[in-house]
Image 1: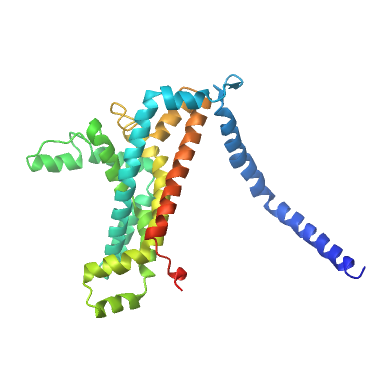
Image 2 (image 1 turned 60 degrees about the vertical axis):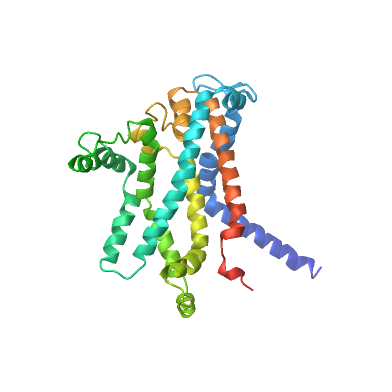
Length: 305
């Protein structure tokens, strides 16, 4: 009895503390269940239905998925556009962000000013960014084509040409790397100075120090930016919608835009839900591939014995 008594008191105390904890986090918990868990489960159910919002959902089994994978030719174009954008845009964005962060990590006059300038695109609203780039890319009086005209070159149809539309959006993506630059700057400043000193003693030049010291020590940050960029690019929507609306000739009809059209223009909620779950599986597969490959190229200092 002398043992059971304290155990019962501890048990009741734990239950009371647990109850208090649940009560304190209940606002967040209710919101999480209502705005995150329920929509996820509902979209999974709707993906097996024909649902137009106005009428009750009608169970159709795997028809939406089979139609997407076997019959929808537009879906293949959309998937190709998205993979093109991800496979080119993500590496280019990471390289540009890391290169700029490396430059801004050096001692230079006006470093704080340049850091602010390069971070600004991260906080500019997407609509404002779209308006600025619409002017820069304008075929008649845009900034770039005006410079080309002054040099006697022909104008480039940046957003109106199917061949140039996706590269033009990738350029904007590479320009808007402010958040990634901040992450890389933090990683660069954590590289131990002693490693550079040791490399100097061994006779390494600037490029060898950058390649053999800087990059390996920053690989955890590179992996983080790579994964988050990958997920973001698969869901690319706002600038593509604002600048091109999916055109010209479906050249920039990305996955997010096609999903939006089916859900809110055609009111094919079941079809759009199936699109969303296929996108989820696609992102999971690519993320697993990157994580599996990271064991070969990511260096964690804490793992040294």
